[in-house]
Amino acid sequence: MLSNEWTVPDFYPIAYLPHGVRLSAYSGEAADLPADILQSFLDGVAAGRLTVPIDRTYTLDEITTAHADMEAGNATGKLVVLP
Image 1 (tube, one colour):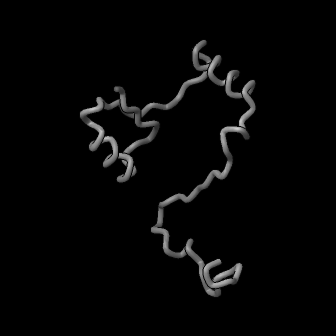
Image 2 (cartoon, rainbow, N blue to C red; image 1 turned 90 degrees about the vertical axis):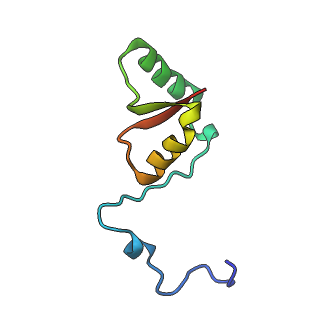
């Protein structure tokens, strides 16, 4: 929009992604998730019917390692920092 145009000619950012890299996006907000749906998920986790895939937990002192692992794509699940 800085150029006062809605499109950029010959711009195809997907071509710049390395092979094997996945690109996804989510543009929703917290208000888009109904409270009953979230509560149902949380109840399922609490009851052991659902799991959240946690790759590794870190102490607060390991926050730089956690961030480096996140940036390097070294996780297959959630990275959790415990205070």
